[in-house]
Image 1 (spheres, rainbow, N blue to C red):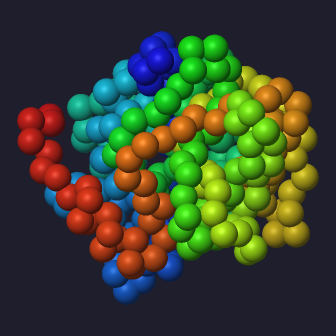
Image 2: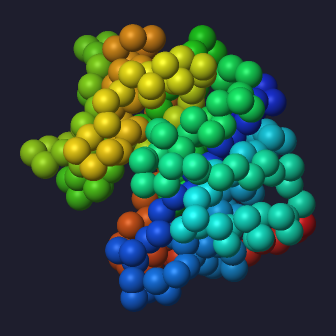
Length: 245
């Protein structure tokens, strides 16, 4: 099943909350991470261009650190609904709750600092899932989150944010195929000592209570956190806009 068939017109929600301080001095301190240019367009445009191929409904969540994204999005020829995170600093899961009134059931959540080029293997009977890829890259696993599957590789059993002791396995991506079951999972997730609702904790709750499938990805994927990630991304994703409006 393809992305468009699974979404069936449902929204893509992009959360842009990162300030990208770890990217300094490769970018200015006041420039939101999603506005960093890769080739001839910022990261947010790469994401909008990608997901507009599969759905006509795009939701972008920003906060007081990323408000400059709003002006940029308003000038684009896409149907974009802009939402404001009323609790900045509380994490991706908390920010996602802003989109709840605009979601009928299923949707895809993507993070505003991840780029990818490739294909997802979605089973026709999947209710909800997370993008993953197999890797021996310990650095990729430590900088993202690891995913453990059941013995038959049919369902997700465990997620671990930035694991320390890992050699190889499945790396979780910033792409989540969700439905209305996520809202209760978020509300039932305790906040950590910094007051953050960790998205991986909410996904673990979802896996335990409603089930979560792996969506295997083949292609290039980069979670942009450091200047070295920018360099790599610019080699892979710096393609021209061509005939994009």
